[in-house]
Amino acid sequence: MERAFRAPGRVNLIGEHTDYNLGFVCPIALDLECVVTSSRSTDGRLHVYTETLQKAGDWDPGEIPNLSPAHDWTDYVIGVARELIAAGYSVGSQKLRIRSTVPEGAGLSSSASLEVASALAMLGRPIDKLELAKLCQRAERGFVGVPSGIMDQYVAVFGERGAAIEVDCRSLTHKVVRLPPNVEIVAVNTMVKHALGQSAYKDRVRECAAAVDAIRARHPQVKNLRDVDGAMFREVEASLPEVVRKRARHVVSEDERVEAFVAACAAGDRRKMGELFVASHRSLQFDYEVSCEELDFLVDKAIGIEGVYGARMTGGGFGGCTVNLVGPGAAARFETEIATRYRGRFGVEPQIYQCRPSAGASEVVALWVVR
View 1 (cartoon, rainbow, N blue to C red):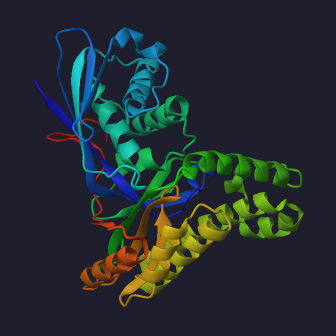
View 2: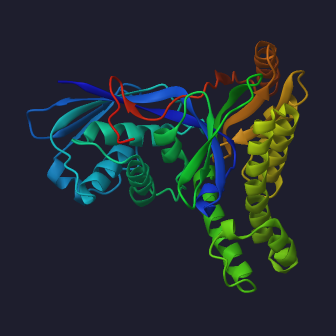
């Protein structure tokens, strides 16, 4: 019997690089998704095939706990399999087939959607939703080697159809955020991913930890940047080294922007939502320094197009996508104008995605995770 499981990609509306600092994020799950089908194998091996890359691999399930990273697409599947085994679940002989519409390298979380869908496909029994998200995050951190926060896996599991979610990355709880009905969300893919991204991500994690150490010298109760509010930061910022001061200023102010964005959504204040988008991008551009020429160009041009309330980079940075808040009836004109301008500047045709909030992970026919 063949079974199919899906997990969505995501676009983060606001709250960038705050999740691994245990702060707030506000993503939506997308209708772009990864689907993994599972069927029985009779040769005692775990077979995995990806339609996207047209590549395959197979392993003896008993050897999976001893495997080392291959530094390719298989690490996401094998990392999850290792964590399932370590948690006491059985990963037996089976055939997995992967099909994904989440573009790789676009900052829309193709990796987390693959992790969550693969975990569901390999499982032989139900699993608690939060345990599933945490298990997949451990796979990415411990085996793939990316010191990521939990946002991507969390929204892949808990995403809400027709809404965003505000995730508290310290308590690992969330609340549903209803977006105003008269706003559209459009992502624009730069089609680039600069090599600096992977190393710089790890640098930012270390720099945030250094900021915590420096602030803790005056405020011993501080354990992470989530514990630092605006007033505390303003009190200590002059004493911080320049780089860690900038990194901390972004995280502290970004957490405040998430809260303000959620309030603006509740009030239906599209203009304020857009202003917060732009403020977030400028903070990522100048304080966190994870933007790039292509992202900055898209943001600068987008906010000058009629009907656009705001724009910002989304995802880890150094390429990938911008996310744009567009008024009703303005999306088609926006897409045409932004593509023309980007093509004229960089000679590249950007991919553009209408972002419709989707539900979290599920079996294609029946929900497999415990509600």
